[in-house]
Image (cartoon, rainbow, N blue to C red; front, side):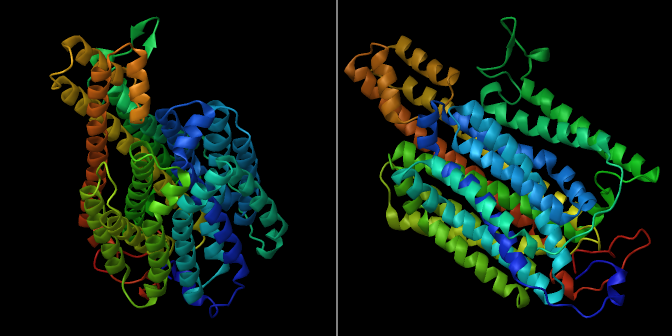
Length: 562
């Protein structure tokens, strides 16, 4: 593995028990399963908690936001406490959050249990998993371990829709979270299988922690609220203070929060540089980001998570809100994606010793791009099973190939003894990409829905002008992706005539499909951009590259041609 020059003096690679990767994979399975289950159960959760799609979108985004914001801290604590201790503590916190979520009576408690407590636990566990693999396995065993972990990530994303759909249909979405608590307790009884890992005493960079949490948190929160607040010009639901809209200089709060986020992150970079120059240990060693291979892996991982979370957010909305499927039917319809993801994640891991990671990643992104376009072509009022299934299978195949490679690309480029920090960066990229995927695509979805509905309802000759204006204004002011039945009920409650109700429902149904197509087109465009970046992924596995360091102690130059 390309780590440091110290590796030349290392004894021959030892063979460790595969029970460790089995435990770590089980933890990884639960955490990835968690989000896909929530996505596929959107309709049931919304109804059960008396909330809205936008409210649940907030919970999904805050969950990944909490993880992204705290992941750097989690990675540092993993190095400081020892990866095993961080893993155990993180799993216990995560289990407490799962139990709270299972018992949640409303959206507020769900936000605390799932978005906050589970997110905090995951921020400790995910970097610890990466560090434990580095410290447990060597040589080809380590490559295999990362391949297994990537395959398990794919398997959990694949199984999530089906498991979540089945459980939500025959019982309740709450059962899944209660089951997660049981899994955590079982893993805790087996924690002795994980070898002890020593920590290292170091003063925690509290200034860096605060700046990283604030910078990442403010930025993603701004993106989350953009569908209600607008991006640059004020939207219909800007926040108010004392009955007055908060629109500094006549602009949306979103743009000001994004600027604030950029300033905070720039401040973080400067702060970390000064901490390092003073001889203290920073929260994040910025020299890690100068390692070309590691940086390329992080960018591609964030892109992968953006695409997978955006896709798993859009598809259930189409299948449930437009076609009226329940959670189980949704899981079955997504099965082509799930199976292809599982097969290609495991197959990609098997190919890791035969093909260069750049080629496998390029195939993954290309398959993802084509799959999104094919799926887009078959978004219609009536489901075309074959065409839609082919599109989903291509999307799943692409995601599986990416999942099988990127963890190994990132961690194999990290210097020796820096597994926790590299794992923190990996987790940050993973969850930042997931947060932005849900938030940005959700923003596009609601924005296109509102604008298209206004255009279509305004062109309906059978509707009086005042009804056209009121209908468009109602959707704009209450931006949400609801079913046509809900729109019909609202129109009838407003006292409209049957013909007017029918025209409004017809207009909304057309706007729904346009919004979904716009969201999928956005994901496809992002995949196209990611395809252009694939050439930055190394041609060869890091384990075949020379193992040396430069004068600063970081791995030698990982140029694009490696």
